[in-house]
Length: 137
Image (cartoon, rainbow, N blue to C red; front, side, top):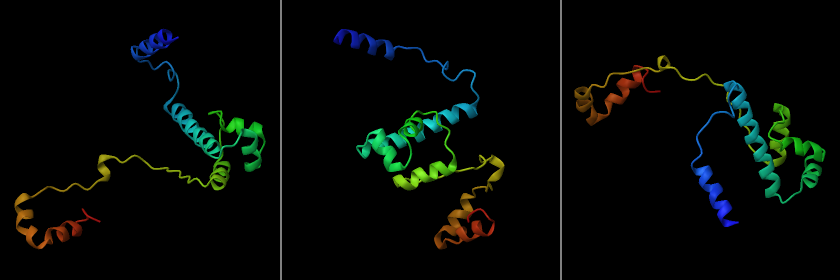
């Protein structure tokens, strides 16, 4: 038995990297799969920490055991309302962030003037100067 497991470990350690699992999927589909897996894993982790079976957990959550199974399947497409209800019951924090990625043009760039900074460093006036120019909020 040990030799078989050792051989399997060797095969895994030397396996070629591949993207076949995500091949043909859009970035959005991959992200959806990953996020659903994270949510399902957290729900299952919460249930296990409470030392409950799916049936006991279903009674606690006010749903059927079949629904718990779906939640933990890594494929159930949760609504925001359902997630909020689950989080409320399990004392979990949920946050959804819809933000645009920052582009280089979104930042104010300033030129570092070593001589000016050295002169003004003594009285920290340089911070006021940068703040006045909108570089420091």
